[in-house]
Length: 479
Length: 123
Image (cartoon, rainbow over all chains, first blue to last red; front, side, top):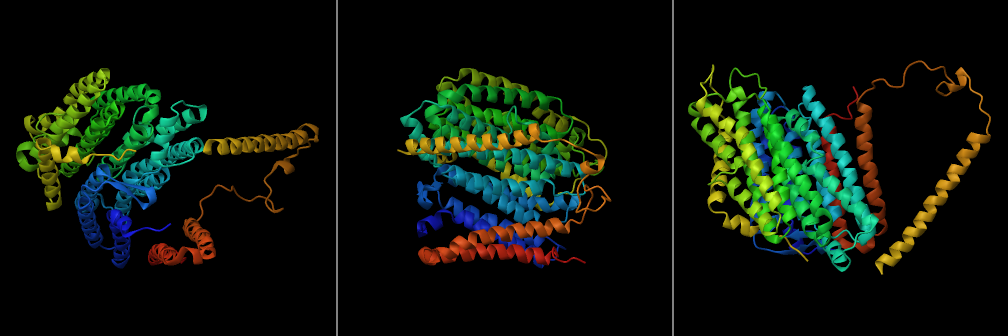
């Protein structure tokens, strides 16, 4: 088994990140743990270079590495998105880590390796490579979550995430093993062909599909496997929460599309109803729980559960237009959620607040800090799903795909839930612009935050107005 | 084709599983039901090489043990990769050599990192 140059160039973004992570480790060792800004710089440059390499792959469609890696629109688009998420997380982390007094240079290599794992996941064309990517991503995240090691909440979050993550990985691995026992191959394409030839389900297949579904449900945090996510999101350092509520979730969703939407599509009639119920329950749970939160971080955590519900609608709809819609919505979700968390992190550094992410910290900030106010408003409008933002088009595409394929109940449930969600998202905007400011409204405003907010809000408006390039990119290879 | 082979293998495997379970169950069951049971306080106490137990086994001990154990596992796995590589070295050619060198280089960066972070410094 040998690889050609095409193979090597096809996985260039991943290779660049491997080199970046190793360089970052060496730079961190050389700085003797005093100052991690050099490590941050190496990581940021690595993400930019890797992102450029990813974008240069636009338009190439094929299979690499003897059929182990898909080179298609999903791979290209999400590699680029992950690089953007990684880059922005890396540049806005130093100020936060300094604020929280976390002085560990390991943060940046771990971030790089987590993004690497996500890239491997979205490109994987077989279950085993996907699993390796998943573990690379998860193991880095377990450490990142508990990085604030003097804080008992952070330790608790890390412990919960480790136990739950290991548990769900075990489910996933068992599912993969049983799938191999049934099909005799771990390639997605072979799985499709096997079930195209024989769409009846034996007990072994049912067990395999159920175990895989359980594993995925844990990873994307949908009902009834969502309980870990809120505590983990709350306890983790906020920059890590911003990162892990966007990138890893998007990566798991892309694999979910590849495995359930495409590879197991011939047996879709067996799991569609179950997935529809999971989608509806997830939306309702996320939105109803978010209504009652007094902590912005927890509110955003529940909102991200609700969004997983909307995204599942696209997978249930199950044709290629629906997958493109889901891919678009995933991209939009990643951008707006990262933006919302970045804005909340800044708000939380307001003088006189105790750093506990209460809604009160937002009072009257809109006029005192125009950039923060406007960008947080854009993120919230996009999360609600109002035009002209990307969140609106994402919902529109996903729900109309559901209606076209006859899942009208799902589309109605999604719309009703979006209306409920309006309340808690609008509360953020109302508090910023219509409440009287209390006390000191000065906030340290480092440049990286401004860059992050501007880049993300401009991108959300841009792909909200011109969705065509993004949506035409979201093509998945199917046998 | 694949299915028939797999089914045969699966049946062989199931026969093995059942017979192993039955055999183990039989032996344990026989000793439980037929064997005499004489217990005493001394006999039920934890056995520690014949010494009298001094403390509970659940007590904190230095984290350095864990670090060394983790490093050991990494290099244990490395050896597990190196043996088959060395055996089929001739067949793998240049590509195999380069892949393994890259793998070893990455591992050595890890070791360098561990040494520089004074994981092996026991003072």
